Structures are given as structure tokens and as C-alpha cells.
Length: 190
Ligand code: HEC
Ligand code: HEC
Ligand code: HEC
Ligand code: HEC
Ligand code: HEC
Image (cartoon, rainbow, N blue to C red; front, side, top):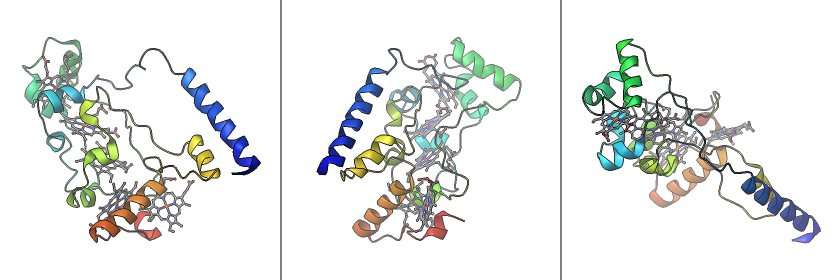
């Protein structure tokens, strides 16, 4: 690996250990206006992802459910709970819930959900085990540790939502299933 490699590896170990020791003891508070539990809805009550994210199969965006879709159940269900009272207040004011976006690629790129759902790529392949989450968190984008691993020649998998991640999957899918997922620049960049 050479002297440079050893030095970089040492830096990497240091970073890994120091970021681990800086982990907060308690979970970070939710950034969302309402603490929406995916786990309860998907695992306990077996509601399909696309019942709420209904645009995924027909448009670029997956979409979020409207307040009235939530209220279809919550006019009655758990209406005494504090988080549901917040929901009812948005409904009463006819205001959309200001959900904070987690997954986002830059404006200069193009990502259509439709093509991926039609090609039967599962939501979880890209978003992780959302059905087990109490709040959806996304660890995405470039990471310093990956850059260092690449430098020492250890080829880690590309982090979600980076260009390497998109292209890596397109290559594998095309080879394995004879698909035509784009590899040319202009399809993903206009
Ligand atoms: C198909 C019915 C259904 C829909 C649609 C639905 N929910 Fe629920 N939700 C439930 C059920 C059932 C529970 C569990 C209630 C319980 O444990 O008492 C629940 C639980 C919750 C809880 C936890 C309440 C607590 O504190 O225990 C929140 C918050 C919540 N839902 C918000 C929402 C929001 C926001 C939407 C719309 C995006 C939504 N729900 C749509 C059925 C639904
Ligand atoms: C009852 C409705 C409901 C169901 C069912 C549901 N979701 Fe959601 N989903 C929401 C709401 C509301 C939000 C916004 C709040 C949040 O991010 O937690 C959300 C947020 C998300 C996000 C983050 C979007 C972003 O970038 O901000 C992802 C990814 C997601 N859902 C995937 C899934 C997947 C995968 C499933 C099935 C396993 C699923 N959802 C089932 C209502 C639902
Ligand atoms: C091939 C990977 C991939 C698959 C499969 C996928 N997503 Fe996404 N999703 C993304 C990316 C990338 C973004 C960010 C897109 C952007 O910023 O334009 C995103 C954004 C979202 C968002 C927030 C923005 C929006 O489009 O409304 C939701 C909600 C979401 N996905 C839900 C889902 C659900 C539900 C499924 C399955 C039915 C699914 N996704 C399947 C990659 C994927
Ligand atoms: C499958 C889709 C896809 C293809 C094909 C693709 N890109 Fe990208 N590209 C992305 C996404 C998504 C990003 C934003 C995420 C990131 O910066 O990694 C990006 C980011 C970039 C950036 C900005 C990097 C930065 O650090 O901000 C450049 C420059 C770029 N692409 C050039 C190209 C060129 C040149 C090609 C053709 C050889 C190409 N891309 C092909 C999806 C793609
Ligand atoms: C887990 C695998 C996977 C990931 C990750 C992935 N894709 Fe794809 N992508 C596919 C498949 C499969 C197809 C469909 C190919 C086909 O139908 O021939 C596709 C098709 C596409 C298309 C073509 C749409 C059309 O209408 O023809 C675009 C554009 C695209 N992807 C962009 C992206 C971008 C941008 C990213 C990263 C942000 C990404 N993809 C991440 C698997 C993936």
C-alpha cells in the first residue's frame, strides 16, 4: 500500500473513532412538524407505501399524502393523541403540513420515480428499511471517509444519492437484466 496509504489509513481510523465518540447519547429530536411514525403505519397496520406516496408510479415525484388523506383515518383513530391534535389543527386551518424534505438531489439533475417503479426497483433499495423507522432519516451524499477509502484503493460502495451510486446501479442492472438505464450525461443532466 505504501507509506502514503498507511498515513491515510491512520487518519481514517482517527476520524472513525472520533466521530463515533461524538455520537449523541439520546436520539436527535424529530425535525418534522408532526412526529409521523412509518413503522406504525406500514408494519402494524400494513398500509402500502404507494397508498400514501401515490404519485411514484406515474410521475417524477413520489409525493406526500394530503392532510385530508391522513384525516380519512385520524378523524377517529387516535384523535386524543397530541400529535393527532396537531394534525387536526392543520386540517381545520386547511393548511398543508410543512414536512421537511430528506431526500434531495441537486437542481441540475433529473430523477424520475416512475421509470424505477416500473422497472420494479423496490423503494427500500434506495431509501432503506423505511417500514422500521419512526422518523425517516437519510444519510446521503459524499463522505470524507469514502474519499479516503478510495484514495487507499479500498473502493467502498458509493453513498446513496451520489452520481457514483446512480451509475453503479444502472451498470449492474443493465448487465444483469438487459435493461437500458441511462449512462449518458444528458439524460440525468439537462
Ligand atoms: C389507513 C389509516 C391511516 C392513515 C391514512 C393515516 N394513519 Fe396515522 N395511524 C393510523 C393508525 C391505525 C395508528 C395507530 C393508532 C394507535 O396506536 O392508537 C396511527 C398512528 C399515527 C400517529 C401516532 C399517534 C400516537 O401518538 O400514538 C401519528 C402521529 C399519525 N398516525 C399521523 C398520521 C399522518 C400525519 C397521516 C397522514 C400523512 C396518517 N397518520 C395517515 C392509521 C392511519
Ligand atoms: C400513512 C402514510 C404513509 C405511508 C403508508 C408511507 N409513508 Fe412515507 N411518508 C409519509 C409522510 C407523511 C412523510 C413525511 C414525513 C416524514 O418524512 O417522516 C413520509 C416521508 C417519506 C420519505 C422521506 C421523503 C423526503 O425526502 O422527505 C420516504 C423516503 C418515504 N416516506 C418512503 C416510504 C416508504 C418506502 C414506504 C413504505 C415502506 C412509506 N413511505 C409509507 C407518509 C407515509
Ligand atoms: C432508484 C432509487 C429510488 C427508488 C426505487 C425510490 N426512490 Fe424515492 N427518491 C429517490 C431519490 C434520488 C429522491 C430525490 C429526488 C429529487 O430530489 O428529485 C427520492 C425522493 C423521494 C421522496 C421525496 C420527494 C418526492 O419525490 O416526493 C419520497 C416521498 C420518496 N422518494 C418515496 C419513495 C417511495 C414510496 C418509493 C417506492 C414506491 C421510492 N421513493 C422509490 C430514489 C428512489
Ligand atoms: C444516472 C444518472 C447520471 C449520469 C448518467 C451522469 N450523472 Fe452526473 N450527476 C448525477 C447526480 C445525481 C449528481 C449529483 C450528486 C453528486 O454530486 O454526486 C451528479 C453530479 C455531477 C457533477 C457535479 C459534481 C459535483 O461535485 O458537484 C458533474 C460535473 C457531473 N455530474 C457530470 C457528469 C458527466 C460529465 C456525465 C457523463 C459522463 C454524468 N455526469 C453522467 C447523475 C448522473
Ligand atoms: C438500485 C438501482 C438504481 C439506482 C440506485 C438508480 N437507478 Fe435510475 N434506473 C434504474 C433502472 C432499473 C432503470 C430502468 C431501466 C429500463 O427500464 O430499461 C432506471 C432508469 C433511469 C432513468 C431513465 C428514465 C426513462 O424515462 O427512461 C433515469 C433518468 C434515471 N434512472 C436516473 C437515475 C438517477 C439520477 C439516479 C441517482 C440519483 C438513479 N437513476 C439511481 C435503476 C437505478
